[in-house]
Image (cartoon, rainbow, N blue to C red):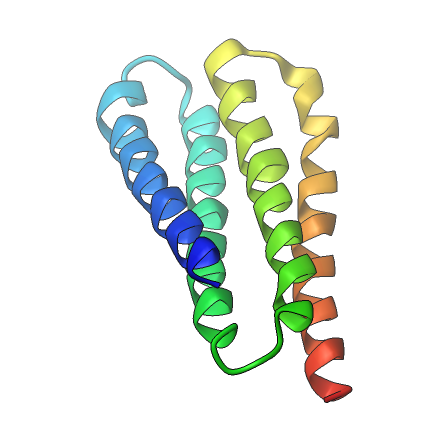
Length: 121
């Protein structure tokens, strides 16, 4: 479970770095609409990084089987949802907008699976 806390902490540090980059480095280089897209990526990235930390902490109370797949799904969600938004803005690769919802589905699946597993305990 310590691994998920470390992963979440590192993802959180990256979210802060990217948030600062967006606020200071991108503001004059991209459109206001693209800045909003980038900030959305940072917002979901940071929320789910904190979620990973929470899952790691929960792992000291619950069996690893309860936590493992939801944590993997949150990680995949960060990489696909936020990652696609970052790349979309930084490279102007608009087709990546079609990939972003798959990351959102991973977020939803992770949280729903966690709830289901906790209910079944």
